[in-house]
View 1: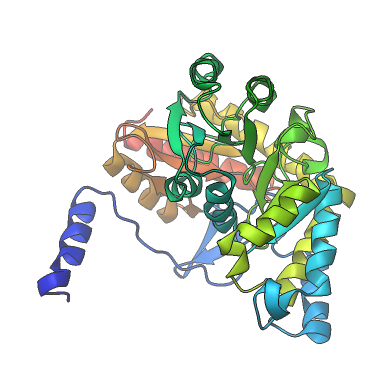
View 2 (view 1 turned 60 degrees about the horizontal axis):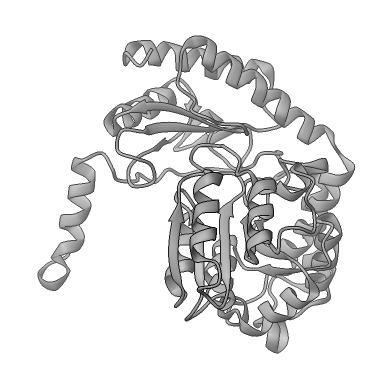
Length: 394
């Protein structure tokens, strides 16, 4: 127990717990799959970002095992010194091809990409223009920058246009940054319009496509492909930890961007490079997504059915357009109770509460998986309906 100068640790945690705003950690025992074991109980997984069910794909596991045999389990260094392996270069070349970009650079995580690159793209005398619901990693990247910042109303292009007009010519550089898919609500930023407005104003565009990778566009190429504006977003940032089923972040764009990033971005320069099995599995994931379209097709088939049934029951799923489907219940305590009751019914889906969402917008955030069967979805839907009625959400 902390005391004295660290007493605030316990006090602040207890305050969160009292308000039903604390996170309670659960233990996944075994692999991440549609059917898994959490805290000793067999459940249906409905809160993983493993959209395409690739975490256990035989080709990814085979690639990882082979890389261990040929390259070991670690790189032994940061990439600028002695950790730049041929596997890393192969992955970046494959990724650039997948994204239809000139070049790509892989970071340790998506958070590291945002926190490390945004502060280097902007500085004193610059302006960052950010959507009000952007991810915390973008917010932290903005805070680390010495640039001024302004926020536009969520996905409101009239407001973005207003900001661009009012600020044009007043700064050395302007950077417009937005999530592609918003992780709490599942809606999509209108990047076709964002790119046009930013281009007209001479601003740099930066898309965080973490939840669009493998999900949106032709063969899952992401937000630029979805809007058919490939080459018109200056910086596309993404991750391997969601639809691709592995871990890691990246940025794609021009060769100039790549060289700039690996010379200036400290989260890249000072982080150990990906272990060989992880790197090889990321490369294999890209190949699977391109060559096996059935995973993406199943994901969207499941998404459409699940959304339709939740709406039919009367649940509020907000403005979701993607496999992220929030079941909005209002109070944090109700969301906490619903999650516990769903677990008792064999469905693992966690509550999202303030400050990640507004105080009156607590929800169960469900995530579709390409590996769910129709029977799995029906079991989960029956549990939601039963509990929704019991808690008087319906």
